[in-house]
Image (cartoon, rainbow, N blue to C red):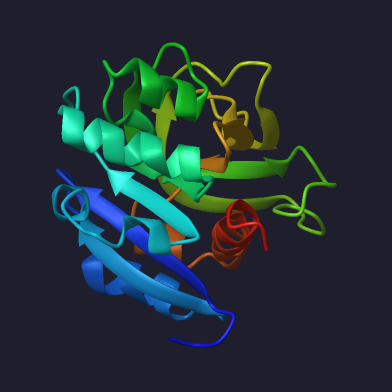
Length: 208
């Protein structure tokens, strides 16, 4: 392990993705020690507290069992950083606590793959988006309600098939949380601005 590096883990499950390109996205991040694991394996791990930031990239469509729910909630009790990435925003649709973590009271959704969107930097002062300019990219987008007033919106878009918010931050328990709608495949993974937002979001969530 590198000195002063941020230990992160990406938690996956119940959704396919381009594994090689996805792993490279994190492996190329400076100052990051990267691990990827199925959420079902993570909940049985004794090392859950060693990660400064956890990236959720899972898509489980059921209420988690007690052990899984407790593992996730203990992250917020310890104040570990959380990044809820792309389809993970739609995970556990009937679990109230995950709804609260994401900050969206109604997560019923539609989806549209391969849409060209213009991402607008709504907040130029937050560390995750400071210095960034608007950009265009192709991604899968969701029709879903936007987060409530207890979230700080960082990125938006006005695509008619997309929810308004692309990225937002909030607090849940002792954790700092970044939710990022983007991230379907390598067409998005390879966009420099997406990479910056994800990297900065990980660092910010970890308190760095």
